[in-house]
Image (cartoon, rainbow, N blue to C red):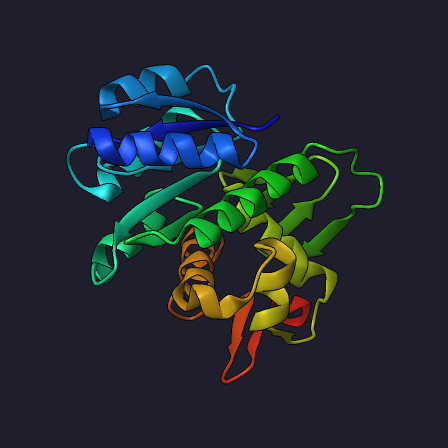
Length: 229
């Protein structure tokens, strides 16, 4: 049974989330403040962390939680708060969902995050190593290196990079990347892939605005090009 940590300061929202997740077969723990969440999450016994009203900005909450846990983070943000969603993703959230939350969408996203966490913990015999000049991706160790130095990537970032590496030199449709890495239709969260690509470029590209490795194929998707590495 997957364990979910709920960070929610509003009592009624906390109760609603707790009831929903338990009805859906999850084990849930709840905390009311970001400080408590950081302490509890540090034990890393959770399969997902849901961030609601935690006090302060969504970006700050995700930054502090990401420093405390490797568990996937799902952040709930107001529907029209686009900048707050981007900040949450930039600071370490794996996923965002808009308030008011639709129960089926929320549980589908949680299951996708939990599936991804389980997948990454399985034996990796079929995964490989790819070299793109200064960039290397080690699928067995689940790491990426630039100039021989390890790069700190989130699970999602590494999964996107591996998806592109398996198709090196070939453009991969946005929808295909999203379905492989997130497990559902890209139309549910169109900016999420773009934000992940932007974060990846900041970490692996010599000049992020002029990519050497990850190239945008306009109107289609992305390509990891060994010829330019």
